[in-house]
Image 1 (cartoon, rainbow, N blue to C red):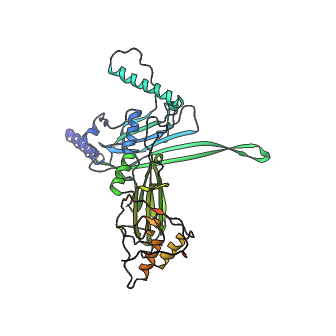
Image 2: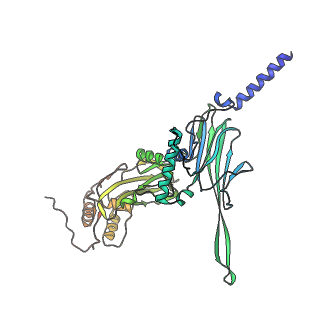
Image 3: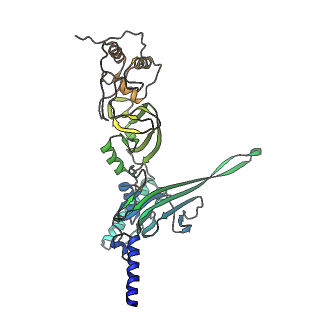
Length: 443
């Protein structure tokens, strides 16, 4: 009887455990194997940020990496489940990490800093010697080129990796607190110092499902946050696209070539919801690299019903014979602010974004040509009625002729989807509408 009761109790415990933990058998081992992709050095942390961004989930493991200011972070304190780190000798910069998870197996909670290589000494022919020798030689060459300060100020990287053990939602919150001092004249001209406290927090949400799958559940988890993801997203969706009811704009330019970004919207205005710069992490990040390409991703949100035109051009202002790329998108938003996924073709010379070419558009074009009105980027593209990559009196004449045609000639449709072209847009000098306008002969 006692044996039967004991077996019953054991079975009850096993049933209870299986009800709350669905993790694979590997998770029940005393020491689960840490995935190979989890960074174990500063260089690997940098590669992680360039490959995955701040977060990555695979092999039932969550890993979060962030950049910290240069310094020694050997001291760690815990305040109400938050692990607090700050550079040694500084109280004005504090980093906090909060893992809000019922239970988990922790693989890593480490800060990797740059360590100045030492002279490896006498050559013993080993692989370890040659690795140390190469690192030391690279450091010596770097000091000659950039000075020692470039290495003393190199950032550190915090790596957090763990394996959740119970079904449900959880999150990782990265906190940062910066204190600065502002001096300003007070009463009687005496300088007074004000303390400015800036607190930031970034939260990444995840969930462990019944089948043992771990996934990131942030609302904007799809948003690229590293060069690799940015490049892949732009290649698949173009520089301007619609995703999750938002207009996504990918701006990319190499300004060392003299190129600039010309971007704008026309029609029913949208609001900029988020702008994120995509940086490429480098081992020697304090040194600027010639020819660096800057990348920014923006999210725009519709606020009311209407049609909006977006356009983005990458070009050199003094050399409009060569345009690197051109992207256009035209979308329709509903009354509730929802952006429809279907893109609509845009009518040529629809400068007021009402969906039609009318007399009002002709008046706007005439004002532009007489320097009474400025056009944004989408309007410049649409004003080129005859698609000769020039906006001048010829376009105005053709627009007037089309408007006087009986019956009205359906206006030409420029595009249905974002396109890429190489032809430049040339803006002629402003003219006055009283000047003679030559219309090409039909013969």
